Structure formats: C-alpha cells, structure tokens
Length: 453
Image (cartoon, rainbow, N blue to C red; front, top):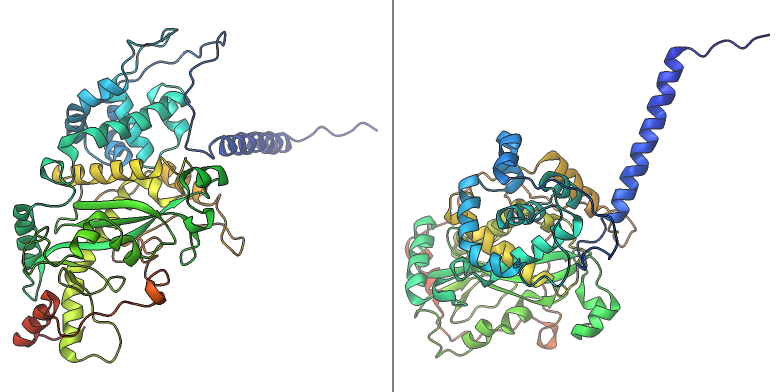
C-alpha cells in the first residue's frame, strides 16, 4: 500500500521548526562570544583573509534611523558633532595610523567621528555585533574605538568636572551651586554646596590574578547587600545633577563612610581650619555619613521631634538630587545597568568617562526626558544581566529605575559602619554648633512641618 503524500501544511511547519532551531543555535553562539567586553587588540593574523566591509557615514546612519537616532546615541546630532569637535585633537592622537608598523587598511581608514559614534552606541548598551554591522568595522576596531574614546574624554580639559580641571568646585562655583539649591529648597537652605552619596558600579567577578595584581581581596569586591560584584562610586553633584566631584577607588563592600573619609577631600575636611569649603557651608549626605562642620545629614531614629522630622523632610528635598543624578547616568548609559565584563583595572576610567559625558549632555540640553533605550539594546542589556547569578542561583535582573527615577538596585549599598572604628556609627561632640544645627534652627524659626499628603 502506497504511503499518502505529506500535506503541504506539515512541510511548512517542519521548515519553520528547522529555521527556528537554526536561529536559536546562532543566537546561542553569539551569546557565548559576547560574554566579555574586553578585547585584546592585536590586529589581523599574518596571512589571514581580509573581510570586506563598507565604512558607513554617521550622517547616513542617522538618516536611516530617523526618529530613533537619538534613542541609539542618547544625544542629538548637533551634540554629537560638538562633542567630536571637542575631542578631535585627543582622538587624532589616539588613532594616529602614521606609526603603523605593518599592513594597510584594505577597507579604508575609520574616521574619528565614526569611532566616536561606535563608542557612544556601546556606552548606550548596544551589542558589539550590532555596532559592527551598522558602522562597517570589525570587532577589534569597535573595542579599540571604545577605549580610545575613553582616553580622549578623560584627557580633554573642556570636559572636566570643574573649572580649570580642579578636583573640587572653587568658592565661586560653590556660591553658584548654593544659590541653585536654595532656589529648589522649600526651607530656604542656602548653604549647601554639594549633595553626596555612593553607588555600586556592577561588574563581573574579578579574577584572582587581577585581584592579586592590585592587592585587593576578591571577596572585597562583592557587595552582600546588593549581591553583586563591583566598585563603590562616591560622587557629589550640583543642583542641576551635574557631577562635580568623583572618587572610584574602593571595592563594593566598603561603606560610604569609610570610602569618604579616605578620599583626599574627606581627609582635608577633617581639619576644621580647611578653606576648601566656604565658611558655614555644608555637603548634604544621608545617614551613611556623620554630622560635622562640613556635613549635614538626616537625624537618625524614630524618637525625634516634629522640628527634627521637618528638617529631615526638607533636607531630603535637596539631598535626593544626587540619587536622581545616578538615575539619569544609569538610564542614559545602558552598560551600567548590567555587569561590566572587562578588566577590573579599566572600570574606573570608563565610569569617569561616562560621568563626564553625562555632564556634557546636561550642558547641551540632552538631559531632560532622555528616551528609553531601543528595544534591541534593552534585550541585549537584560540578556547580559541574566548571565550573572545570585546567592540563590537565580538569574540577575537588569537594573531599572524606581518611581522616583532612582536605581535602587545600585544605590544604598554602603549604608553600614561595619568597617568603621568599633563597627559603630561615630559620635559627634554635642557641644559643637554645626551648620546642620543652624539649619534645624532655621526650620524651627519658620515653624515648618512635614507636609501631610
């Protein structure tokens, strides 16, 4: 008896199943290849066949992307061109091909604007393979562009955090910042020159060899509160969420208090005779810090008076600015929403570069209403985050912002005093009339209370 012919619908389902299986196999291969952001740039192997690629023009890419171009680059075209003009001298030094020891560029030289575009796409969270296809360059060229742009941004004086490349705002800048915070304070706090906090910079688990090289224990990079590896980023921002002071030298397990007191600025401010900060002016921090002559913090505990409760509320109005700044930074540069899988020694320089670009975007009007990432970038960010596991062997989720625009999965990791002397919160001398006590007195004199919502 002859077998009945297979219906066409069955053949269609089989072809679809085979096609799906092939696509899943390709996706798995790409995922395996894309586990590391660090690429050793060694050039093509001698005798290897060149892959023909067509270098793209940035203006053509922007035309093809249309309204999605700003989503992809996190800034408009005018800002990208202005950034390129600022970085051009440093970019030429980074990508000078005159000293090439051997070989030519069969596909043509890569322009500095194209390299900058590739780096910005990488910072925004784009996959290196998407960047290869959209820009017409190889994988090694993409990574070389990224690290070259990082060096160029950090070497450009025009992108420094403060005037004249200073580490900390000058007295004149402090007056401007204090006036800005006063305008946004309902309690007329007019002596705040920075808001300070710490944030976890998420990385993959560093190797034992690298930890031995930098003489920091591997376990110190693990933050138990957030169950993530990384660095502790300490930063202070002004009233416009621009970062004005940065320190990223401590592993993630370090408390905010210990990290602050071991920075150059923190050590100098321990001296009451220091003129780094204007007289009677303060830095606003949270309860991870301690009240003194240059620091204002919330009053801890639940057994507080109505005046102290009102002071806490009005201080938080201003202090939350730094948390919003972290939210804008993480939302704009998607690579901070998933673990950075690169050499632990490269993390500080790339984070400082992103913070400088954050300030540049604010200065050029590209900060407010930052668009959400492209759907393809979002999938890539979530996929890369899921490669990490929690203590319970569950997949990690990509960092997202809460209802207040704060990356709560990264902020608040250093709110402890385990590494402080005697493992306790240091106490202040109650006889000192600090600027913080004057702020509390101002709240009492104005008869302010926490609003009832």
